Length: 317
Ligand SMILES: NC(=O)C1=CN([C@@H]2O[C@H](COP(=O)(O)OP(=O)(O)OC[C@H]3O[C@@H](n4cnc5c(N)ncnc54)[C@H](O)[C@@H]3O)[C@@H](O)[C@H]2O)C=CC1
Ligand SMILES: O=C(CO)COP(=O)(O)O
Image (cartoon, rainbow, N blue to C red; front, side, top):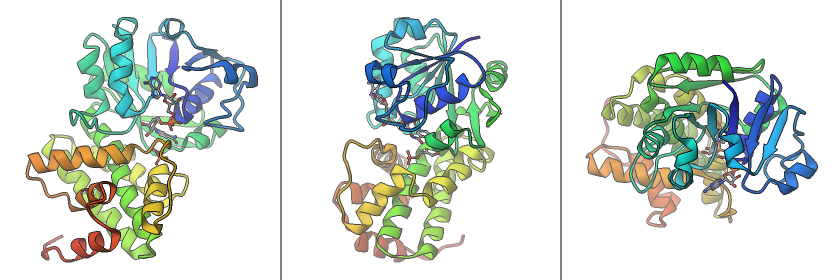
């Protein structure tokens, strides 16, 4: 079955470049003109030329000729994109390539796809990977989650490349939660590092953040094993420790009190608010997520957030 990538941001472009190394792949962009001339996405992924088999198009109908569509638009834009194009996308295998929880509904990307295009087969591709690493052909391992295991096996075969190794699960809820929540914890870690609180504080936030991820996952009936895999623990590790991460960098600027470019895609910002709301509705204790939401909504400053976290009642690990 042929593959197309829909959405030519950094991640969509990188996936298309990677897949084009093993055969023809179509990349749909809202505005392909500059990329067509340069054969490169200079705005989002400069320095990574398109391989010859990458077919760039601005015509979504052309991309939708493929049976498998990788949808790489930010989570908060996913529903609108699907609504606008659901006739073209009907009956396709739609693989969400985004990490977040929808602010308006508390739903993850797979649920959003299933909601809007009920006759499509939904899946998600997630895990530790910077777009530039994938585009450069560096070794990367990701999680492919699809509730229908037969389709999952097919996707795993189709989307694995020489450098991009996919593991498979049927636990779509666990996979989407891992990818969404690690961004929130990365903002917390960046904030701590930016404020000069040190690497021990970061390790504590990563570990207790992981406990929050597991708590929410259990509440939503995800498989705890999934959170320990690439889409959870793996991506948490990458995102909380690298200045290549936009979520981590937003945190750094919060900690340092410096300006951050508001046009940057930082999925953890809306997700922190969405998950904080969800936790309040379900009486779940997610203190790091609550602190990140408070910082982003200017209800808290860094010193107060840290003091509050340290002053919580002592408990068993
Ligand atoms: N950049 C990275 O290293 C990685 C990103 N991701 C995930 O990929 C998703 C996309 O992120 P990036 O590609 O990095 O963001 P980006 O900021 O580079 O690009 C976002 C793209 O979405 C397009 N877009 C926005 N709204 C749209 C709409 N309504 N309809 C159609 N297209 C629309 C924009 O034109 C842009 O091309 C995010 O969920 C992110 O978490 C996942 C792994 C790695
Ligand atoms: O998801 C990513 C790495 O796995 C990319 O992280 P950022 O969105 O924080 O840049």
